[in-house]
Length: 431
Image 1 (cartoon, rainbow, N blue to C red):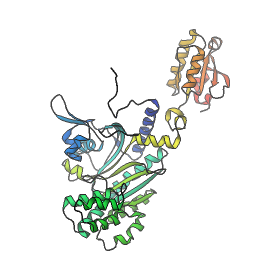
Image 2: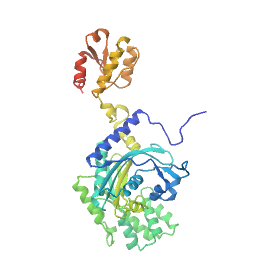
Image 3: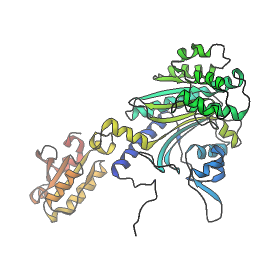
Image 4: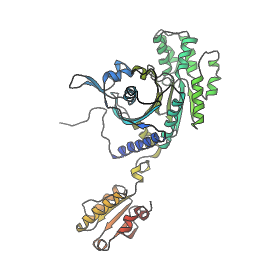
């Protein structure tokens, strides 16, 4: 019998684990800077709770099942739903409520390169009084967090209410189903040509001329001034105030690389106004998506509360970090930068002293260990694990309370007092 993992699952090994922890550390630091409180919603929800965001069809795309009590439950597929459920039930919390989360989620998607059915996600949410400043703060946070990882980000924003207003007032379409179909057509602009979209939607009964006008506007991309001055918007009765206020706030916050992209509409039954996507400066890899979703708090009984947020996949960040910095030692990892000294011993009678010295160094914040093996194997192990220095105990040195400190990179050695090593290990190894 072969013991294999289910499709779309994998075991996380040390290097990837440390990269996930690095992304988590930078995320928590960023959250604290912006005064977001850290939370983690329950990994298991009632299926009806998750359907509140995405409808009953979501059960086909997630891990949903009956528990032993016969209840329909599911593993969370994002962090937003659980956080919103939590906030909606806490009327004692004063707005704005700023929450951040980092944790695993599960989706029954088709596995592909860098995309698994179990993965990690970071998430920030602001529950507010419908303020555009919250949208700007979420985008500022996103920019700051990615920069802290060494990732240069390009931010593309839009206000989907502008397109909805055009569809209803300029194109005279009021039927909700047709409005959504028109927006779905816009959402395909990044993947298909205009002609292909027009042909596809002609078969669905969508007027080609109306759709062509909408795609003209949706195709606008550039600075806010360039977009608003476009001939395609002349004579259009569209409200540009929210998008203008957002760009002004971002400028005041020093957030650059912001592009208006009218084709961004995102989750059609979910987002309600400002939407944005973030791409790496090096490629067109989408790293983050977000926007305002006032609809979800209302579903949970909070018409008095607006909501805006952003989320990104951590594994996708890791792929980009590897691309930027290369594999192995080129990656930015706390574990690589941590001071480290391996403790080796030349005689079995010195093992207890070596163990004690390694423990003392760990209490000083220095990564240290020793293993039961011959001296050659000990040093080979230290080298394979990336230790820069090894402190070698010999019988004579042990009696004199001294060690030989070997540089594992260039092979140079020096003799030092053990007390000096323990008093200021960083000074001794030059970190």
